[in-house]
Length: 562
Image (tube, rainbow, N blue to C red; front, side, top):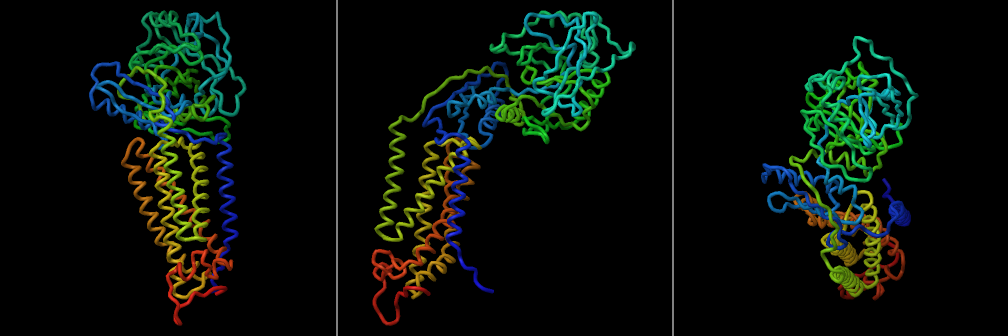
């Protein structure tokens, strides 16, 4: 079989196009500056203080672990989480635009499904729920709750007894045509009594909450729009009066599903959808319970609400019983909002209740320290280049060009990761990138020395470039594999900024392999065709004196074509 002829020009062209694509992706992020860490740019500090009795070191450590999982969900955002004293958790988040991450950290993520009694009412001024609005729409066939339902309701003065009134739950892409459900038969029509139905039967209680809860509901007021709501005592065994983010107030039954019954949470754009949604899957007995409750709500035109940390985030009617244990929160989510909610639910509820304070902090390193670190890296890089130019002469140009290309690729990767994975560059991360310069230089030295060994044995440069490559690449791959393995182990077992160092070192090692295979090697193949290198010029780095060859009848350097 004929040996495959290398095509270095095509390899360099493809590699160049890959770099252009990389910077095209960076351009989509609309920023040409890496995200800097707390030590370089400052950021936000959140102090979580436990507000309940019975705080134990174990619970505090559990809460800190959950908070760290939320803050560093991608593993490279460089948020620092630590405990302080016996009641406080300190979270330091790099950057100035971290509002969604701050919300994710602060959220206690106590998720509960409750039944809506009556209908949501304007939160200010207080409105009596005794006049129940007439039904307007039912939920869409998928029975997925909507984050921000948009159906209109009209008051029905003739109705004197509160009963659940269904509300629309628009799908992510379409809004169904209004459907007026039939009125339940007289035998099923709820009646209000002074005492009300037992709270342990949430569906019955939602139809007959009793006069005491109706009075509390009428007197309750939601905060003005833009003002933070006071913490709500969300007891899962008792009914709840609360609001949503639009200022509507709700009278809700006790919890029928707890957040601890959540099996998984994820986010994405549903099939045939246009907006983000949060997908929930329940475990244990929760699917059976939810199936039973949703069947009862379907039969009685009832409504259920999803309550997160005491606030209604979604409510919907039921067009079909939900029997498979899967639900979906849809609405006006942005990607960051959906990710924040999904992470809060996925990483669980905090075992303690906390009060929070947020402050802006400055960089821990002065500007001159950052400049000194950058100058040290540049000086080290220049010294490596000068040494390679002196020792390898003409071949040193390949080293310089490869290091420049590696720097360009590394910067582009940092920009893309900053936007896609939240990668934050700290001083240890910069150190990891600088350390990789030595790894890259090692690859050149191994390859060049192998080429020189082949030429000492009398082979031409063109042959030496290929045979030397076959032997050198395995050595270089083994060395890079060791560095990459060390970075992975350090990343897994380290915390904080040390993980940033390991991540940067691992990324740089992979970039070294890419540059070595797809730039350095094809460049050497092309240079071997030029007389300046293959003729043994004393400035090429491949002369007899450079190779250490004595003049003799049995050893010579073959130039020209092989």
